[in-house]
Length: 248
Image 1 (cartoon, rainbow, N blue to C red):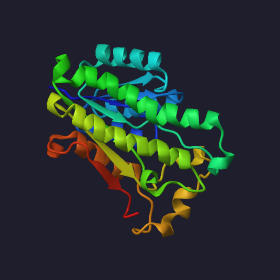
Image 2: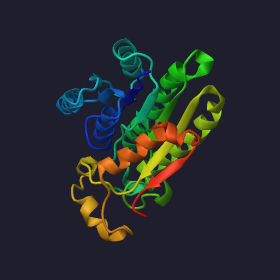
Image 3: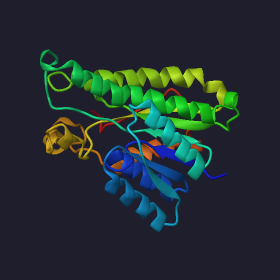
Image 4: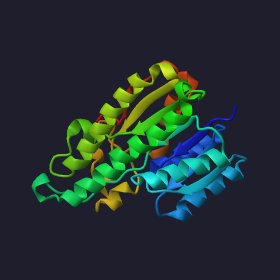
């Protein structure tokens, strides 16, 4: 049976690396994006060029109606979902909490937390043996910020990722007898363009000296950890939060 994977935020960075690696390993891949259709289409084209199955699907994961429409398209075009990677996420510019706005917090949690919950809910409806599914695996993207706290930079982002950690453990236990494994990867400083979106394009290289391995990680290194957690090799792992952070 072909494994069907949905990667949210799959057009760039860790999401793109995950989609590409999954395509190489035989998954049929739905590449979700919010606004950058060109990047998502490029990922799809590369998967297809290697003989894989993939398509791009637009949806803002914080919008319930768009999430439902996205899943309906995945159902039609690829079949029953067996794997989900909740990768879509945002950061913001460095600010202390006493400088941050409610609007910033609402956006941060809407995408990073509510998007993860929405997409996971719909995945469970398709994967769970309780609902007639065949089982499956979910991997959520957290961050070492959830442990470090993000003081002076983005405590709100760290708090959102802390919520993802807790959700991962809770959902894993809730569906453990229904054929679904739920885990998370907690990356450290990774060389992707998410830093530019937060106003610090050189952040990964600037922080290299603070990392025990003395370098930022790559998107592919995170993708490899994600694909392991999705695979049968991690068949007894659920509720785990795996640090892939160069020792940070």
